[in-house]
Amino acid sequence: DVKVTQSSRYLVKRTGEKVFLECVQDMDHENMFWYRQDPGLGLRLIYFSYDVKMKEKGDIPEGYSVSREKKERFSLILESASTNQTSMYLCASNPRPGLQHNEQFFGPGTRLTVL
Amino acid sequence: GIQVEQSPPDLILQEGANSTLRCNFSDSVNNLQWFHQNPWGQLINLFYIPSGTKQNGRLSATTVATERYSLLYISSSQTTDSGVYFCAVKNSGGSNYKLTFGKGTLLTVNP
Image (cartoon, rainbow over the protein chains, first blue to last red):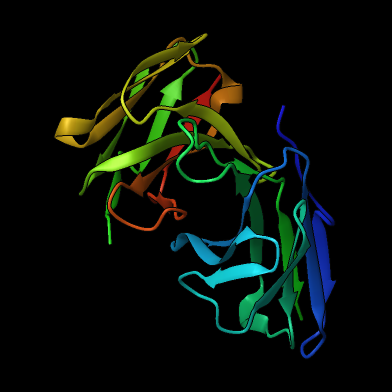
C-alpha cells in the first residue's frame, strides 16, 4: 500500500515564525504536491514537484516556498507565518505522468493554527 | 481551467438507505478519482475511474467520459459512511500534474 506521512497532525505557531511542514512517501513516486483546504474554498494547490529539486507553482503559491532534496521528501515552508495561513495542509504523491494508472494518494493532513 | 461540480452539496440519510452522488466536469479528462474525507481530515481513496464502472463492496462508481459525468453509488449506508465525498479530475489537455477538485458532498448517515 502507498503510504504518505506528514510530520505533524496538529501545529500551533505564532505570527512571524518560520514553519516547516514535512511530507514523506514510500512508493518512489516522482510527483509530490502540497494543497491547503479551507471551508467554502475546497482544496487548492500550493506547489508541486515533478522530480528532485524541481518545483512549479500551483494556484496559490504566495507566502510559501518548497524544497525537494530527496525523491521521497517534500517540504512546505512558511517563511513568515501569518494568521491567514491557518488551514488544513494536505500532502499528496503520484507516479510519473504517462503511466496508465496515475492515482494520487494523500497524507493524513496537518492542521496549522497561526496565532 | 476545467470546472468540477458535485451534487448534491448535502445529503442526509437513514442507515440502510442507498444514495447516488454526481460529479459533472467541463472538459475531457484522463484521470478521475473519488475520495472520502474522514472526520480526522484524511482523504481516503475510493476509486480511480477515468472511465467505466468499478465496484468495491457497498460502493460502486461509473464514469461516462463522453458525457462528462461520474456517479458514486453507496448502498446500505452505514454511520461510518458519513463525511465529505470529493470528486477530482485531471484535464486531458491541461497540466500533466494538477488534480482539480469539486467542492464535495457532505453525507450524514443517521442511526
